[in-house]
Length: 221
Image (cartoon, rainbow, N blue to C red):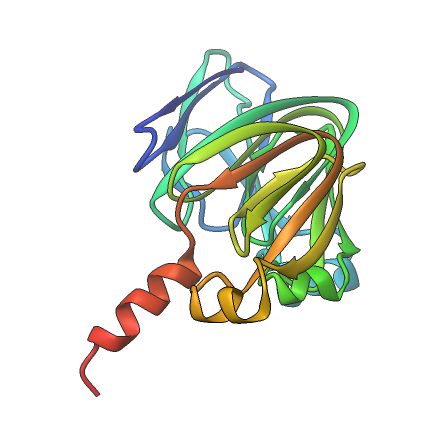
């Protein structure tokens, strides 16, 4: 499979060329264009109960699409995400990666998309009560609104709420005030997320919550 991310960082999309016999699993409604003779099969995103949980608790679609090239030559496919922003490609080898709800775009068949309890810390940090965990061996594509910045932590660091997109599962998250009580609330920062441990994480430069907060006062009622 030949894949390239174009349009970064503002309007990224994935341009794929599937070789004969290859399959890619994608989030529902991610396809922008495809070769006419690619085969598409929709299936539940896991078992029935698991698919319902991913939809209502993890922000994912009830169904995923499998695109398979059953022809004898390479066929093209373009996949996009629902919001303007950047996309990242990561290769997992019997590893796991935690994603914020809605970040998953597509993956090769060797990866499994699961749902785990993230805790009330994640909910207060506006990341949701549950987190998506992608595990196995294969290639994963994820994205978010705004640009994506990959960083490493060895100890601890602070991430603003609703900006954490992906992180390795050994990292621990803890919610706290940005500063003192007065500074945290009157300075506009409020709660932040303390990331603890050693590993890699990805943040988004913009957040939908921030966009909504900026737009709401300007909308006529």
